[in-house]
Length: 209
Image (cartoon, rainbow, N blue to C red; front, side):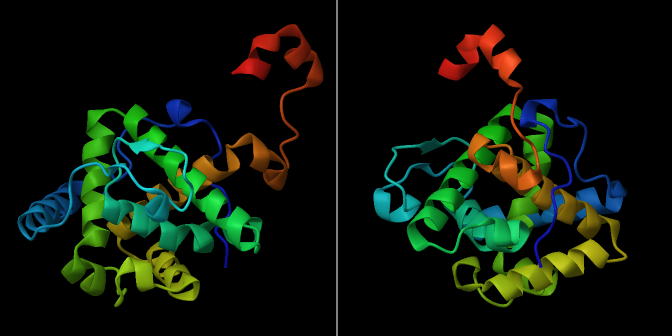
């Protein structure tokens, strides 16, 4: 099951307040997980420039926020979130996923320290093996998770009675949908026809952006 876009506004225009408003208990829980994940050896540094085999697209992009583990997380979740909007042709599919993850990273950089801190806690919660199993109920590491397993995880968090999980679901799907459907090549998939021709003619600099 694909997860429809929640909000396709650019990252810079999205709500800059907290993504995860689950109360003091949720904040303390995420903070504890993040510290534990760091002590256990989970990667916390940005992935930087990956080689072509890692990115699956040799464009030399340098990640500034997402870690190697975060990249694997989104590689697993994007096919479930975007669903049929992703082409089934292997190479274009890989490129679409890789490009979307790069745009997610670019969005994270623009979020500012407060939201970056909360999103780091969320990603650590999902990347740390113990909490991935106990809280997300995902038994395999993310590179080995199937699309149906990723979809089942997202559905559990979407319908959970725990606000922390609901807000985590919203954050993951909102980030992913904005990064995917916000790309000009994907505008038509959400019914957006693109900027009106008169505006593009009046502001030709946008064609060269």
